[in-house]
Image 1 (tube, rainbow, N blue to C red):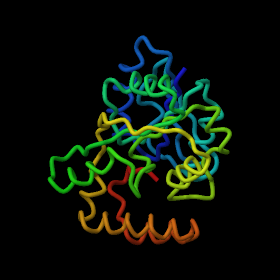
Image 2 (image 1 turned 180 degrees about the vertical axis):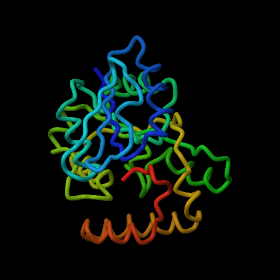
Image 3 (image 1 turned 135 degrees about the vertical axis):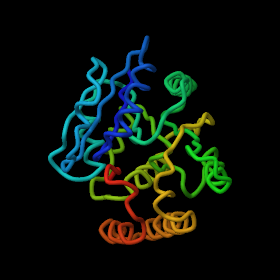
Length: 237
């Protein structure tokens, strides 16, 4: 069974597109979809779609890592898929995951492209098809065997910005066998619409570099909030 986990903070608009798409993909598959709402979620995300395969819960504590860990605890699947609310997976999504795991890999990510035909964004997306300094970011959608996820201790809940990169570093140190699937997810370009292309890329590079140099999670969070403007009121954490 596959458990698709979606951490969300006021993501009603994006969930209205994503959830019906995921339900369509679950037809004929043993899949559950868990929407993990933030403690401060204030919209009607939990009322978007009523379906046997979809469940919702609201976290008591703050943080995307907390949301994903709690959802993983509640999940029934032996494969966990962590998907952002503003990402749309390809139609072969579930088959790609199963094939990769059947081939002996323990985890994986997907390449992606943006919902914008900008030449510069196409350049950004091209780097997601191979391992790089940015591999492991949440937009790439992590899937992993639940036993492996648990053996690594889940996401570090003290990481309030870089929890996905920190988890990927532990994956590599533990020599978890992973694959990047070259079948694009479609990722929202909303961050670039609210900030310039140069601002977002320089900010991302700075944050990843400082994280790798050992800067504290609180300092990274503060810096992130100063550098990147929130795209929309219904944006993710």
